[in-house]
Picture 1 (tube, one colour):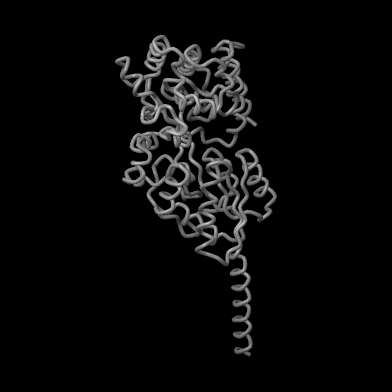
Picture 2 (cartoon, rainbow, N blue to C red; picture 1 turned 90 degrees about the horizontal axis):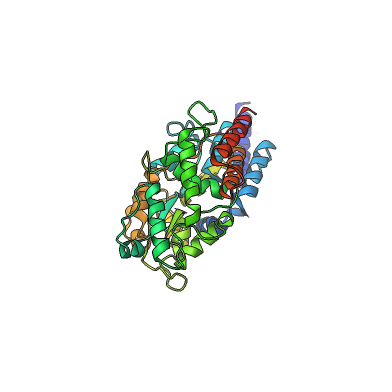
Length: 412
């Protein structure tokens, strides 16, 4: 009887192997749209060429719908997604709910990533297993017109109070040029613009004990400084988003930008679009009572915990974050890499002259609070910041009310 049993075992193993092989020939990738989508599309095309038998489906969605799609798939255990692209701020919720596979257990992802992006891809942060691989090394930078500062004998600002002083000087001496710009629209944009100032003043949204911490002298000083920039900004800045800031800088209508993401910088030196070619410098945001606090905005790739094609998904992620493809993504799409060594790559520095400063910002980047309720917290803070910006509430009142609402949100 042993031979039939052995034969049956072999046949069963072959059948299982065939099913597994068939499953591995399919890959569903849920990713972002816009520039991130372009980068991911290039990688899908390149991976498909290398693996022609794999059937790949790529979903391209804006940030909000992407989050909902991934979360719904996880909650319903739909097993409909394999690779998921996520904002680093989604990671705490996804990891806490076991929505992502442990990449170390699957076989690991090689590479020395910039430390800030590496830290938020792990659970616990910075020390635990890797649950995602950083793909886009996004970090908030500060932009200034080097030509205008030199013209008026000004040094680059080292503090936010110096930003206001320089902005006022240039606005008085340069007709048609506003001193500084930022994103003032309600929600994520105004919060993102405020966070480097808050961090520079030593303020926090959530303290180390997990409590709301905006009702503090440091937060008040930061908000008052933020509001002091409004008279030095273009008219209507309270409705500005990324497009307005980028175009104003390209057209030479602003001297500085309190927030300038690397993805916005790709056309600064393009003479067909920009009037400030070679004149805009990107650096870490200024400090104040503390050193610079650039906001981390990394995007990562993970494997859905219920993926039926986990091995194939991991292979795709390794492909995307390899040095060769991280460099290709940067050159072809402008999306910044996450591998630290590439910020010294000769070809990349020639194309993106601010890369050395960007690496410095990334190494010192501050992640947003690692809480599962961030979306709600951000919405609350964004609403009250905008109300203060347009003069509907006083700074102290805005922060106190935001603090109360955030604390209630944290308790849910």
